[in-house]
Length: 317
Ligand code: FAD
Image 1 (cartoon, rainbow, N blue to C red):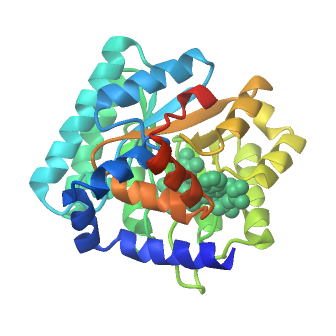
Image 2 (cartoon, rainbow, N blue to C red; image 1 turned 45 degrees about the vertical axis):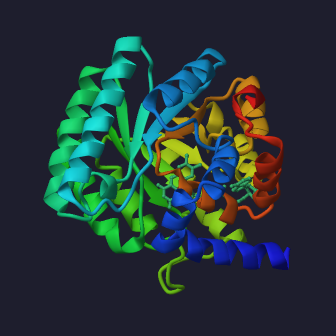
């Protein structure tokens, strides 16, 4: 496990190295290899891939989230292109009668360029989502962006109640944030947190973090607030099921496509509400690195897929 942990830490830092990313993407040998292992976690490169797998999962009894992968977009033109892609995705879902939550990072649609651009874009997306019977869920990014993301969320949800936001249990501030957000009608997605943050503002992975996570779920349930338990942790699910929370119509489980499909299926077969978070797009490299780094044994699965050929996870649900 020590080697796996070292590998995961190394992967986290090389994942953000743009030279390495470009080298892999340009390499006629490496790119197809990485593509083979990504199919397990990412539906494909086009919205049709995401919608098609989403449709299959809906027919199996799941709820879905769809995301066009991207973050930290640094030119206005790219941000506008991303927004247009989200609009096309929502229109396609609307035309096909697909009920989905659309997930997005505000830094994909303007936050890294200018917060007002992110606000304007989100407002437009919320309107299109509403007219297509869909909802939006804002992802939470590094702690340096938390204030900006929550501020944009509050402005938009005051006009469109179909917009929700993600909170990270690992941040100490979340206890205050969550109580404040109960004043707004949007759904809350609760995650442990994917970013490495300074120790004075963050609880590391530990029993203490799990206790905090459950405490936050308790608060949502007592406030009758809609909440997604976005985790792959069986210990968390055991506790929320024991408390009867997943039977509550305001509460659902949400897991990433390709991760613990067995657990998603078990909960769904037990009659509980389970949402599967599906991604698509060409910017899958960082997403794949994150999925491996957060659970190092996934590297063995990735290597097996590279050798034996790509595996789609859909049949596992
Ligand atoms: P952990 O404590 O990390 O893991 C507990 C157990 O879960 C592990 O022992 C293992 O059994 C299983 N597990 C966890 N990860 C994997 C994996 N990759 N493969 C196989 N098994 C695994 N983070 C953000 O910071 N911002 C967001 O907006 C955000 N959105 C998310 C949306 C969804 C739907 C989900 C499910 C996660 C999201 N995350 C987000 C990531 C989240 O913060 C965690 O980093 C991630 O879910 C891993 O934490 P965990 O709760 O599964 O528990």
